[in-house]
Image (tube, one colour):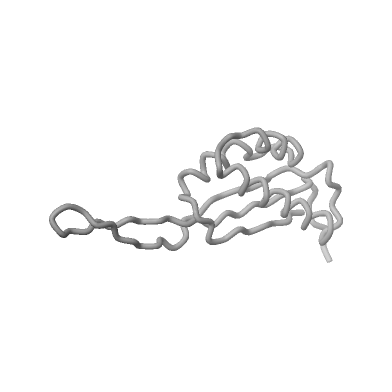
Length: 116
């Protein structure tokens, strides 16, 4: 059975978050949280928060055992880009793209869902 957590409109580029997400893919939830606690990237805090939220959803909503949980799927999609302008020489302006991300974390206990 799977439980998920979604973080949307994160003010960080998807490329930076994917680097952190790749470190914890297919790991146990407890080991992933420990690893992200000591990771210096700013995206580690966001990914850690989403993993802990998905684990809490699994234990509260689906009654899964917290010790058996592992990250079955984690992926980062691109969100809307905020467009800003910066003044440049000779009266010109250049575009600044402030990128956002959507993060989805799925945790599983490895058991199949029972037929209802």
